[in-house]
Length: 330
Length: 262
Image (cartoon, rainbow over all chains, first blue to last red; front, side, top):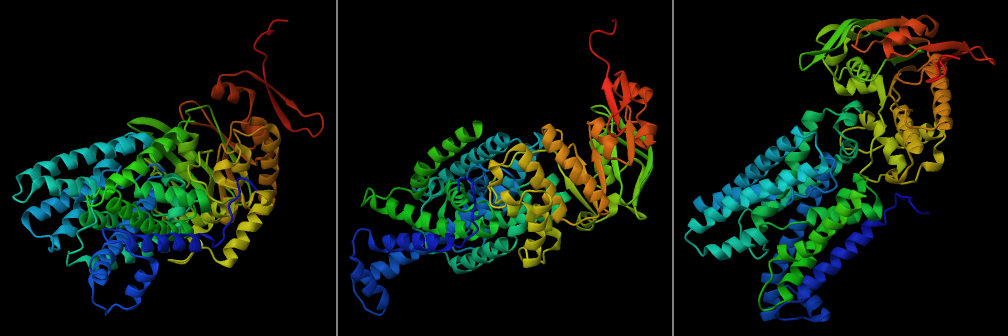
């Protein structure tokens, strides 16, 4: 019946199949296309030498894994921002949180190397500062939906402007790294702290999932949530810090990839409703699949040239944002 | 159960409420009435400890309301808010299950018992048929019943309603009044802010009437408080008070706009 929401487990196989299909496409396509049997042969015989095996194991698999991690983190952080700020248009990129994280990461890179732990630490600080700034500005205006997004876009612009300034001073090829930060790129799989970052992201996502009831309550507004028994100040800080950490790690690894946190949770809500017990895992799995698919497109669309992955997600996400804006205007 | 003594509150140095004193007994319906801007919603917030009084105190069995932890307060009082938009589409059952938030163990969702209580609350508010609907697509009347079900699922002894029926049509309004009276008969304490003088006089044991400057005009039974003089002081409207021909309940009739002279 129309307007009904069924609480079934259908989301799980749908999301997992989508992710698997994206992963297979991501491993199959590229400068050397592989057939499915070739790919399976390589995957089940990792010890075999050969160019194709090297391409899959050394190049494509790390990249697919990175895309999955970043996509998962962005989609879950988007869901959390939307619930806590009670704003369906919230997205880490549009809120300026990604911009703050990128600025922090670039600051770290001008003084330390990509291997340094200063990169995720400063990215996290930048993300939280940007979020705090946006939150304070928007709160003065009684949290009108569009004020929050406007403030976020402005803080994001400010951050990327400072970031450009810093990059133009840096010795190594500034335009190339500027493109990396501003439009997103999943080719940097070399950071030594990557495994720890992955563990941290998955840990935070599981913790946020465990707080699904709390996220549900937050969507009713802070005032109602307080009457339902939530210690607003403390819980809000913890949830936003968790989401901020996810964004910081995603951005430190892949630059500014926008709209994943907008498109994926919305699609999941449309299909399975807003309950976070389903939304968080569905967004995590589908977000991973979404970015793996987007990155595969980015690598193959204009091969041998590579389109920044942020361009692909913006091509999908920006029209979607406009559609949502129109929908809400009615 | 709730003791209010010499309560005063100001906002931006402007006095909103002053010298309010009354008490709420368990198992009664108390209606807070007064003109727009007389501080009714603020008083309701002070009652449930969401604001700190500037003078006097609000005590729940001896404990000052604003000092009680949120969780503790949520087990004592459930709130039905004024109508609000639902930007996210939840299944109605999930909406009602939010009332069970304080009872859930850390890191766990609603238990089987929680879901049973949710379904009972939906049945009690005649909204079982809405259980699987999407909250974003409910009508005003349906949403208000779901909010009421959520407050019931919270299983708190006190229920507070802030103009919860103001946007409902006559039929839905009567339905909610009946439900409130039944709940009261079952032992719930109900505190409501209301503009509907006829219904409030009919179902309330006690009325608190505020004047436009947030001072207490009276606290007592509807007959005591809702006098022609008090109503004119509070609202600046002349009314006639009659008794309903069928049951004798108070009926308040504003004098006609024209035709004062026959």
